[in-house]
Image 1 (spheres, rainbow, N blue to C red):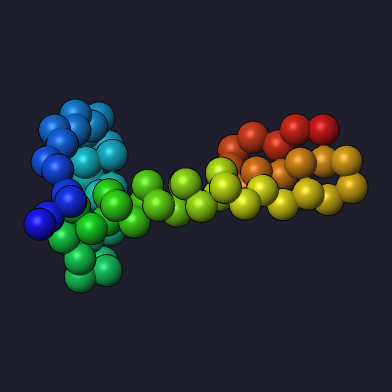
Image 2: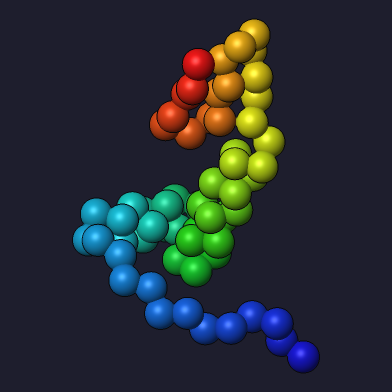
Length: 64
């Protein structure tokens, strides 16, 4: 039994182009690159690093 479900995703053109370039560079399918990018973002959210009283969530936002 396959637990994967199809999902239609509308992306801005620049993200489509980035996914295509990443898939070509890594020799993966575009679907694999989308999954990799989402998992990487999820991992960054799940394991924030703290330095002193500064919380660095390794994304674009750092909070003091």
